[in-house]
Every structure is written in structure tokens, then in C-alpha cells.
Image (cartoon, rainbow, N blue to C red; front, side, top):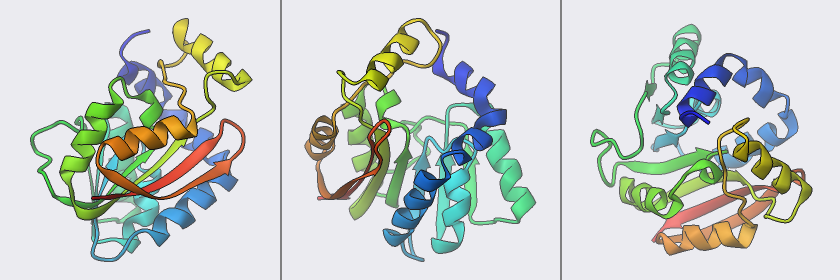
Amino acid sequence: MKKPETFWNRSADSYDKEEMSYSSTRFKLLARTKKQLSKQDHVLDFGCATGILATEIASDVHSVIGIDTASRMIEIAQDKSVDLHITNVAYSNIDIFDSTLRPSSFDAVLAIYLLHLLDNLPAYLNRIHDLMKPGGKFISLTPCPGKKSFIGNALLLAGKIGLIPSQTLFSVSELETHIANAGFRILSSECLAQKGRQQFIVAKKN
């Protein structure tokens, strides 16, 4: 398929409706994420899409920077902040390796439904680690169906024929190993939804 950004730009206008159809998982995600954050935190929302989570946590933290390589996602997120009069969230159409993001700048980094879409996960995890302050928290939610499940096989096929961006089908243990190898200590790992094995992981920068 074309660049993943093309797919996500096409999906942007229907993204919120699709995501909120999984309201039970989203409710659990929000509740557990808020428990990990504090009013003093500077947060990076990596792959922020339309800013759903950034909008929801804005009142619980000091500031949020949301980044996404899909420009239409960022446009929608920015419009949402204006409409809701949210002033402590800023969005940028950049990749996480952009030089404007400085090392040791963030108390928390979020990666929601993202890690399985990255083409070189170790490099991205190392960059996330670099951007975080010592003791900072890395919070992720990732489908981990493994390679032998029906859902996993369907996703692989859809990626191969270009219907969706290609993905890596991690098992939970494989994903936890990647995160640990990047210099994080895993604090908790929980399945929020059995369908697709939606794994919520909180890790701390060593």
C-alpha cells in the first residue's frame, strides 16, 4: 500500500466514531492512564491521531504534546482543542525523531494502538526512552494476538494485500521483552479486552 500516512489521512474523519465504538476498552484505558499521571506531568502523546486521549487527560496534567505523521489527524485534533477551549495541549505533524523534541523532556510518553504499526520498534523505543526524564512512565496499549490466532492471520492478510498498514503481531511476552530491552522496567501489564488481546503496559525509565 501507499505510505501509512495516506491510509490514516483517509481514515481521519471517521476515526473518532470508530474508536469510540469500543467504549468499554476506552473507558478502562482512560481510567488506568489517569492513575499513572499527575498534575505536574509534561506528556508526549506519540501517534495521537485525533487527540482523543490527549483531550481526555488535559485537565489531569500540566501539558500534552500530541504528534502524528498524518496531517488530517492533527487538523482534527487542533480543531477539537479550539472548540473545547483546551489551552495546555499542542499538536504537531511530526515524527518522534524530529529534533524539536528534546531529550529528557517528558514525564510520561503515551503510545496507544501504535507499537504494532512501527517498522523498527527497538529504534522507536530507544528514542522514547531518550525523550523521557529519569523515572518517567511509558504507557502503551497494543494488540498482541500473536501470529497463530485467527485475528492475527486476518490482519496479516489485510496488510499484505494493502487494505491496512502492515503490522507486527506480537505476543505479550515478545512486546514486554522489547520494552525491557530498551531500558524500561515494566510496572504492570494487563489485558483490557480479550478480542485481539489488547495489552495495557506501564513501564518506568530506569
